[in-house]
Length: 127
Image 1 (cartoon, helix red, strand yellow):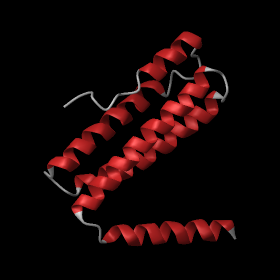
Image 2 (tube, helix red, strand yellow):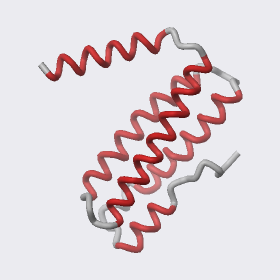
Image 3 (tube, rainbow, N blue to C red):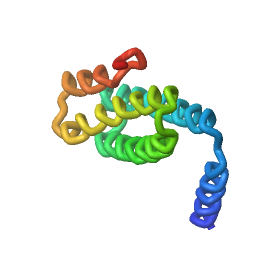
C-alpha cells in the first residue's frame, strides 16, 4: 500500500512539473539546492559529533546527488536563462563537494570530519 502511495505521489509531482514556467523551475531549483545544503550541513554536523553513522551520511550524499542531478537537468532545459545559470552553478558546487568527499568518509578521523564539514560550499563562493 505504501509503495502505491509513493508511486502516485511521484507521478503527481512529475505531472505538475511538466507545465512549469521558467521562473518556477529556477525557484524550485534554488530552494532544492539551499535545502540540501542545509540538510547536509546538519547531517555532517551530527556526524562530526559521532551522533550519526557514516553509512547514513553516505546515503544522504547519494540522495542529494540524485535529486540535484535531476534539478540540474531541469534547469539546463532553460538554456541561457541567467538565473537558471546562477542556480546551476550552486548545484555544481554542492555536487562537486559531494563527489570530492564521498570516498573519504569511511576512514575520516575527528579532524578530517571537521574539515569535510567546513568544506561545504557557502552561497558566496564562485561566480
